[in-house]
Length: 419
Image 1 (cartoon, rainbow, N blue to C red):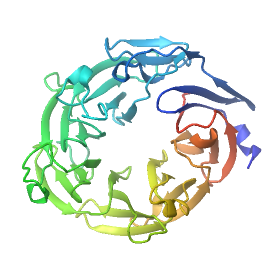
Image 2 (image 1 turned 180 degrees about the horizontal axis):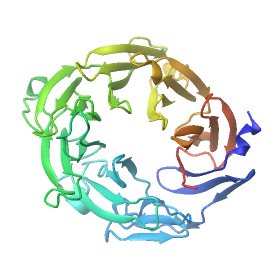
Image 3 (image 1 turned 45 degrees about the horizontal axis):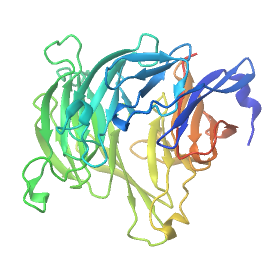
Image 4 (image 1 turned 90 degrees about the vertical axis):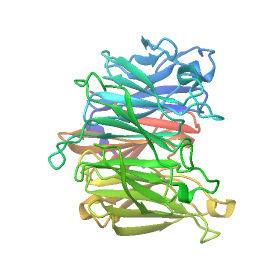
């Protein structure tokens, strides 16, 4: 589909494509009706082992590549993109100019042996990430990955809540609480507490402490209640944590879900999961909406032949976008809609109707938004397996066009660049 109504909007996006070992970045820019698709020049591979490969941080205003040397911790600004630069998973702190990059450690042990030895893996905080003023802050050792991050902060209904970064560690079953207030020099960028998520009654081998089988994967803060919520995927429970004392106040059962996140206003929690057992021919996506005030399930959804992957909220907070993926047995994968991008209407919360479904061609990548004055004009989605950038009308959620950007690969990411 090619709808030229998109051509009146100026935009600039970056598209990373790679195979988990090597990659490239392509810039797609439109200005005054003129389109350019240009790959950033590739530099030679570093030749370093995985833990010492340069970490890709972002692009400056003049589109130079920002790289972090994991050994020296120095930031470099280069015209070329090293072909083996590692694009670490990033969590942006919406209350500051800091971004946090996750290091899950090596596949076998989950340890970041370079920074933490055999004691865990790490996260790295960088200020002004997409700027020539980017600044490395600190690499901090936490539990063994995979990690997720969330941020607590004071709100009108919870003014006493401190600014903290919360990092869950899947292999250890812990949450590291890190100071995130620059004015508090005693705690800033330091681990001030480690929360053990162990529930001994749910362990099969008598464990009473970390490392445990909580497998945390879903961390969210609600400014409405001033509480932190963590999904223990291994136990099928949600832990409610007081950010003042770091104590787990209560736990509720929530089985069958593998991730948990909050709506932009913090009023509801959304859980997502997959049912691969009840139907041998079909994977069934599951979603649940929970009220943060009492943690009751307000809405439950089941979507046949969908495996929910990554989620994104538009800038207005009025829509939830979910990419799909492939999962299940060969018979289930034969029916699954792995090329779907789903759009949910959040204006109807606690109901959450499916308002749109686009078929983009296995979007094993990401989504980002081009907005003006807080109103989404365009939605961009990367599609790794056919190397295209999908351009979507942000109001109508209709596909405008697909731009050929890169060779087909297994992994892609797209992000909107400042004008």
